[in-house]
Length: 310
Ligand SMILES: Nc1ncnc2c1ncn2[C@@H]1O[C@H](COP(=O)(O)OP(=O)(O)OP(=O)(O)O)[C@@H](O)[C@H]1O
Image (cartoon, rainbow, N blue to C red; front, side):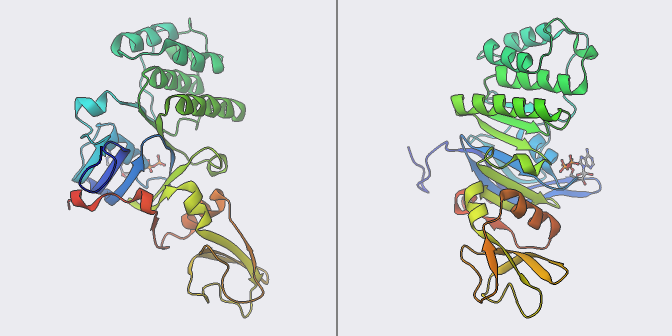
């Protein structure tokens, strides 16, 4: 079924138009517009204080927008149709400290009609968290695993995860990410995961959302974003990385050598450059180091303009 724009109805898990949120001290998000297709695993990246948690809290209906619209599978975040389909793991992971892990999962089962005990138990087993332990006696990383188990047990269609791996040791981080991605692939779950660990994104996230200072800077398919850039290196003197009319996202010099991240699917015009495709981490670091570089939103990540509200 398609709507008047020819979009497949319900194919966006998340869509924002003109979205803004102002706190007492100022805007945390401004003019945010993007769409995230259902079934994607999306990394939400940005410097501290850039608005990631605010965006996730808006999607989880813990905050109301100051401007604009956010839709979860076509519904307002407060609508029962949206609330039933999302699970949110917040940074502070609120859980009942007196409950055992088993009690916590039992509560999850009672509150969620689609509860998947096997998926929830798999997460706590993966993390070696004993079911009989009280939540209050667990380490921060173990509590995170219980919060993730609750989110996966809910069998939500959209998982919103706010830095879920930040307190996991490197081995457990890999195991938990693996378990999470396996669950998402098996059930077609859409995942939005905020993180500062850029090195772990390659091959894990098929979509990317980079926020800077409350605005979208990159949005779209990771492959498309990566292949739209080139990392070029050459002698510092006499070469201009923007000579071919390309947007230069970032340039750095080391001794006599110049390295630049340019937005181009082809090499810059001119001899003397070594050109290679950057990793996703190279691209993200380039944008993080250059807050004034122009934003890039791929065609697939553009919100439909009919809903724009300012
Ligand atoms: N409850 C609040 N009251 C006032 N200002 C807030 C509140 N929550 C967030 N902010 C401000 O909004 C901005 C965005 O904060 P947010 O927590 O969304 O950023 P973030 O990208 O998640 O940061 P981090 O990576 O540090 O978790 C910051 O300037 C922050 O100080």
